Length: 228
Figure (tube, rainbow, N blue to C red):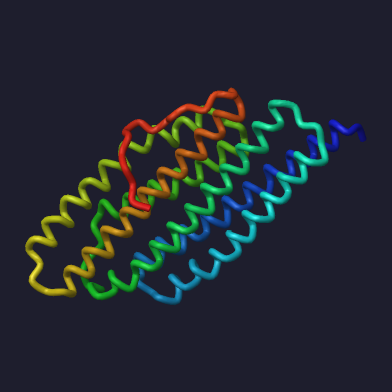
């Protein structure tokens, strides 16, 4: 096997590692959404437990990237793939942190156990999960069209969050009981964390385009500030 063939195998191994990390974060998000739906603390705890594995995976992939750069002779395109992967895993780890934060809101939302979750929040969860899955599929297939599709969904996410924020402000203004304030706060925070995961999915999409084109461009349709 030639050195180039060996290097190509290692680059593919890197891609596989990143995809596996994405799957792990997706599991975190699924469990976080399930915990928010069922309000079961045990499910929320699973999200927190997985977070340690996500962190360990990120550091292992970073070390793998450093080794590739140090021991091989990567061309410019190779370096783009390696450095983009390092950025992607940082965004994935942050997405995992946000999933953990969503799980943390369960303790607040549980106080209104009989209060239905806003349909906008349910839609946000479904949309963000789809965006995360799509960006990782785009990375696996080097699919620029799918990467751009991820970014195109950002505007709907912002709109949904704005609706939840408006309703939360109304609820805060009308609330006479501490319990209602606490529940509304938990719902608002969950929505903020979901919006942030969507932002991070768009970041990954931007890196996918960068790998293929060498151009790093802002792809968010609607610029906005998110709460970390």
